[in-house]
Image 1 (spheres, rainbow, N blue to C red):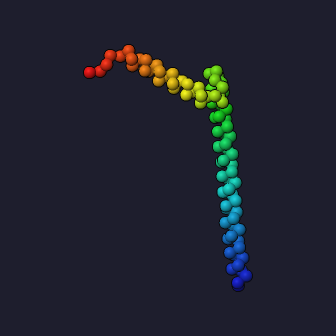
Image 2: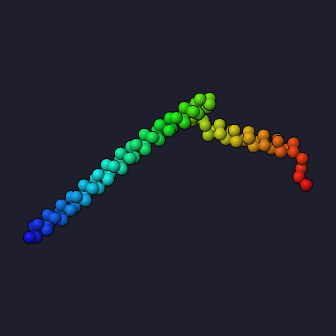
Length: 85
């Protein structure tokens, strides 16, 4: 009888391990799918940036440059407005 009970515990452990393996395989497939989606999005955004005539590697610098230009223009516009009472 003891041997049968040991087999049940062993079978249960194997079944649990099998479930964990299937979960891991599912997670791997989901992760690969998400990675592929992110790669496609990255390529799409990169192409859009290139279409704007901007080197994607310099995009952050371009954004900072544009921000400064906007701030300068806003300051200039504000200087033309009459002071508030």
